[in-house]
Image (cartoon, rainbow, N blue to C red):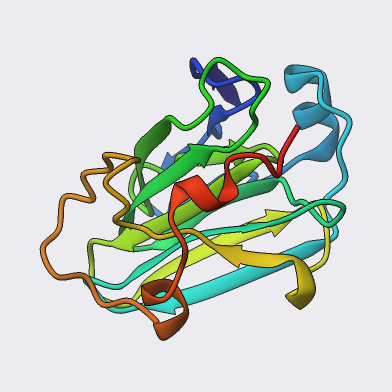
Length: 182
């Protein structure tokens, strides 16, 4: 696998080695030993999640607060999404900034999102399947949603009138979450 660093500490783009022929293709979606060696990160994933969404659905921006924070390894196995993260780590120079990347079944790109980020995505193709590994279990008491279209974040989601949940439409803005992470 090829790992590319972003300008955000520990936010990594991962390209698996894909082996294809006239029958199709094969790739390792995750290999713990290789991940640890190549990233230097000693983490353990404890939960795998998957969602299927229609074109135009926007999910996020979601995160869990301490002590139930989660790092995530995200990918798309069908369709495509514009994946967006916001750095909530007050000790980092990228605090309050966002990062966007196209994840698709075609490009097989994955994104490792460290603890301390809000995460969301907007679906670009009908019936897209989004999968992710988490380093901590879901905790309803620590689950938060940040307002996806908060002007303070300046995120261009590249879609008009996304379909969002009631939870996400009632989310609080960035200002509300400015001091919850390290």
